[in-house]
Image (cartoon, rainbow, N blue to C red; front, side, top):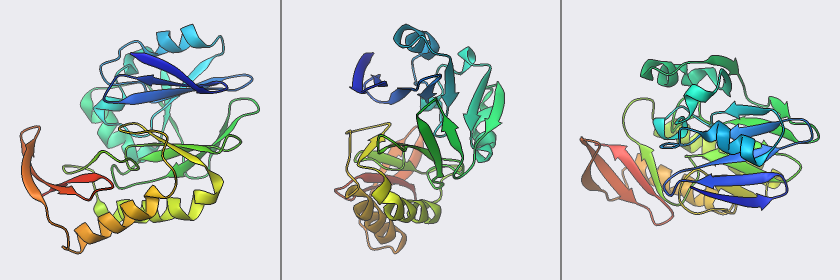
Length: 227
């Protein structure tokens, strides 16, 4: 586990394949996701900040909820409940919706709904620091768009919306692959998704987690989609 301070009161915890973040305000701190193989994200946060620690999930895939047992409650979009609770995880849901603001004390964080990768995917906009934490939909690696809960049409609409909001942030921090990214990746991702939907992209068949999928290397990112 690598812990890197990427700005005042902002840390990234990197497992190698997935990362989560800790943001510190004047009165509270917030974990954005809590790892995959990591089971002690709360302990890592407590070692980093003396402030009370809250948790928010960008979405409920298993590689973002590894330390769930440490948290009695958490922020999450309710559309993720079918994904989260059906896999045996628990805790009290504190629902968040589009444009909600979580204030850590002089550090307001705005919730942006970004469905597509999952129905309740969200991004967290660090308003004053002009950073956005996007989870999985915005990255230059492999974007999983196969299996239950994924929808390419919703994904395309969400990326288009982020393009419209790009004047509010300078850096994008995804949970996988390279970071930080610039907003110029967004039109490229939207174009790639549109080409796949239109049937204009060439893919190769692969098997991932025992499921046959089609992989589209679109240069900007690789989309893994249902056959």
